Length: 149
Image (tube, rainbow, N blue to C red; front, side, top):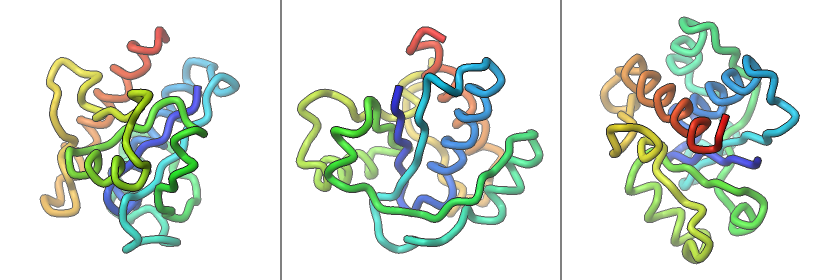
């Protein structure tokens, strides 16, 4: 199962989701069944590492944060991944523009896999990485349940 998380800059929410899902998959012994990555819809943070407060929030919950550099979503990602999962509606709109649409229905909001659909809180503006983590964890657990794990 190939999953790509997407947010605006790929330094906060989408890498947090990437690391949380990798952690959950690792805990269940399912690493060999998943490829999990993340990217941005913008070019602003390309090459930058995970934002330090996001890394700190992951560490508070015992979630390892791998070294990585932000990258932008590319048209070929649509064929390479089974699920392209956005953090908010604006991400979805930009994803459709970059990807040329979503003919196979692969693009979803992470919170749509929970009992409270909507958007993942954006800590870039609120500085509430704890709330973003809560949303992301709930979304990742819901995604795994949706996938039958």
